[in-house]
Image (cartoon, rainbow, N blue to C red; front, top):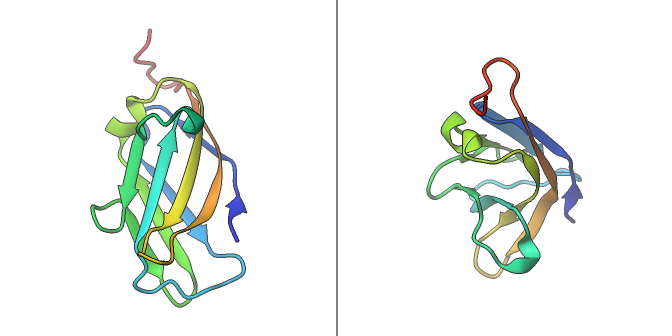
Length: 116
């Protein structure tokens, strides 16, 4: 069953997100994908895509159902300040399912704001 989560990040930050299956489930060998979209209902291409196959999604505890998603600073810096939607999928053929989903808020950084 998919888990609703709220994500908040700052533009220009290196981001590491950790997800734990609830209820706990072994995920060793699964193919996973993380997506961020502005308006999924309009069918626009994802603004962020990270996968186990192409990099950015790592299963850190397969038997315990824990995986992480990393998004580099250059990618978060390219996102305009706004509210987006994210989801994480198991993408193995025949087993495709949503694992986590929810809003993703991108905030302005205070330290050095590239917009000013």
